[in-house]
Length: 336
Ligand code: XIL
Image (cartoon, rainbow, N blue to C red; front, side):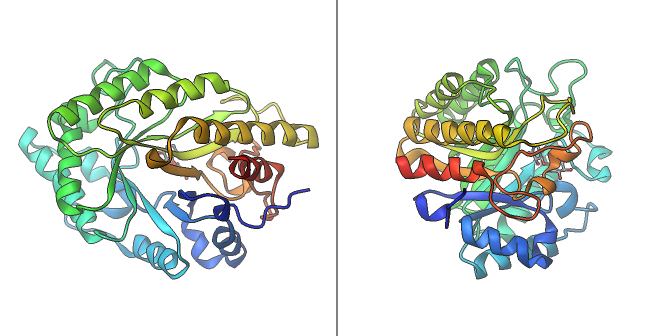
């Protein structure tokens, strides 16, 4: 039995959830979000393609609506995302110009959006997924894909952070990526970049561990070691779990067709262990928060990524009733 009355009430740091545009017309979904979470991330509507459909046109309508909903219901907002190689509009992918023109184009995007929402966001993912698994920059090896690296070089990252800070002096600026929760080569590359940025006086306030993971993998000792590396960065920055979900199948596999009570208990324990690890390793002043990537299982992107499959990765069932995983998350907060 799940007895959690409010997840967010158990924490003094942001407890977030990624939400689709449909939240705004789905009151059952809204009720759960308002009851349990203190922060929202837009799942898709603040990405480059959504916000900047043509070179001379910005589309703020969806982000505005989500922000209004958040402000009306006492939720903060984590901005996702200013610069990413994925989900960019075609005009950007096909942009032609020299390095300076690419820099100006990228900075215009960052400056326009960060200025528009200045003072209203808690945090921004300034750059997303700029590293390869071996710790090198995405785009630096044959076959990699990043228009930003290809056309600007690695300086696109400090340039994006500098532009974001100039536009919004108070928002916390994050570098966000997947597999940082277990891949030490990749995290080492990111930390080297952070060290370089700090040495150069470029603003960066935190690292986001996306944390799209499979139940019981990575193991908790690995997760703690990765968290510790971020905690040890000097000057101190924050660590945020930005996109947590716990799939039951291995990635690319669709073997399981049912979510048994036994599997739910295993997932509950793993959610407990992850939240406990975060509380154990990350000091209060370095906690950027924990965000789950979706509310109910049926709404999870893992239903179609990387292959269509039935998945149960989140804290609520399809009908928004709570799962044991919610209890596991809450139990860890309460035990701290
Ligand atoms: C995903 C969304 O959840 C999907 O709806 C969309 O089709 C693809 O993008 N890393 C990120 C997120 O930073 O933006 C991605 O979100 C999931 C992986």
